[in-house]
Length: 259
Image (spheres, rainbow, N blue to C red):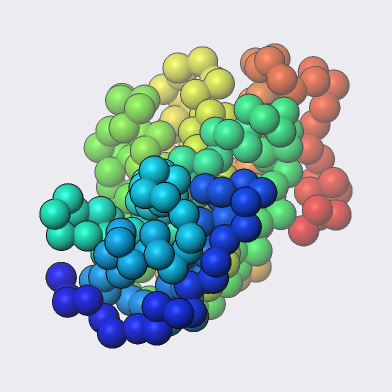
């Protein structure tokens, strides 16, 4: 950890009394941004923060706890609060179940989002992938083959494969969008009956996608991803999985209109 970075404590904005803890959080985030604090930098002491913010220690500590829960800071008793290496993906993974529950997201909603996002993401990945990304994708494929009889491990390897594709784009916004659907992807897969044949079929689609990325064929990569996702839609319909109307089908035409 670095020492206390010399910053301008006067730049911390005095908070309003509308929603005290929320205001403290917002003020501290603004302070971190304006002072350009980086990983390992230390926030001012509680005593200085209390004085600068014009609040008591109790709401300040609650605000610090929130920032720590978000991964923005880490609090070490007796030492103080330090800026953490923020990991947006972990936060988005935690929030995706809330999105599903509170927004009444259906399985069809999830699939439509995946078609819109991932068909374009995989096309970018085919153009931008590095040799390191190819090695990781190949490792994900091998892991899926190895764990073909273990449903939960197979699903994890499947999700790792899709997130690696997103990383290949070198676009942090696209990586974040795919991360949002990470948990939703798992929910869709766990909605299916546990069928070995289905996992084998899924593995073949993933091999096609990998091949297209390796050969730098964005059109083929997009087509392979679309076929994969449409296959999921067909299986949902055939199995009459709850939350997806039986008469609903993501057709090729509708899929193309989404992308």
